[in-house]
Image 1: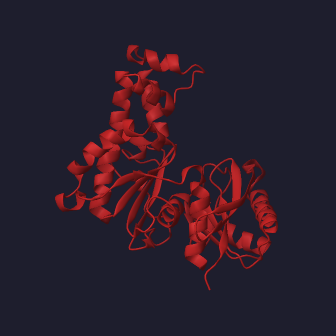
Image 2: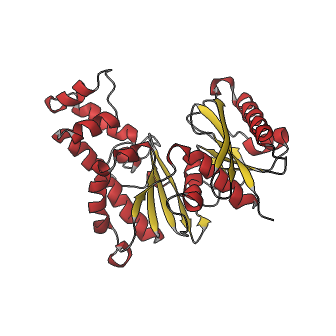
Image 3: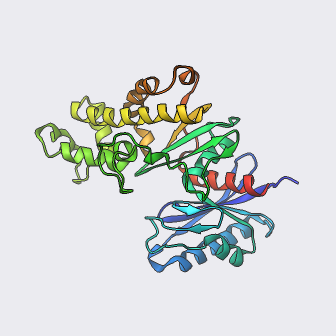
Length: 318
């Protein structure tokens, strides 16, 4: 019997978010609480359990309704263990699934937030009806997920498809992962910010300094300056876009997707970033594979984590 609804948990930011999702993607009874990660893993997990209980009670659903959790990684969805995540200091090899199942009495599934987002796009979003997808989350960092013939591709331990760490250049900038020349080191929010801060130390960066009224230069400041015609800012976004387009071309060669979906906060820069990317894609993908591969924006917005967590629960337990 198909599940009527599931509980989705988004563990991606400074807040824990929990909601009920039905099979059509309607979100209801959404609630949130502060993560307060400085209090340690057990305290955070207790807050997740309490919020699940509160949302379930408000929605009037029983203990047979399962839970999906979208969390930053790295993590192992097979064992339900979060190995490490930068936004939760002190988390090392935390058995989230077993602890939550004990506290809630519910079945729980856990996956990387990028992989969850890919599933959410397939079930509820821009890629609804597709079976072959590459999803890119352009945020402070770059994550994503790959689905082939309806199957999530995540490797032996669920750590695979870290597409933000695809190599762009062996002589490129150092990435936060420790490697050199990753896509994330070119096209993420922090990479665009780092390049802009370098430009801002020169005469070409006058407009960036003027727009950063609080002294904080970020990707949005670069986008504003670029929209005004500021050439140095246009060049920053073109550099990021070219790296993104080259990587997308590689993803097309590797995975032969029906669609590429772009989400995350940096995606809101729009065609200032994606225009240069679209020009690069044909140069880096095979002739027979570059045709009819639409590159579109996510339609899930700020609820991507909840949609992804819900899609994970439906896929795992339905």
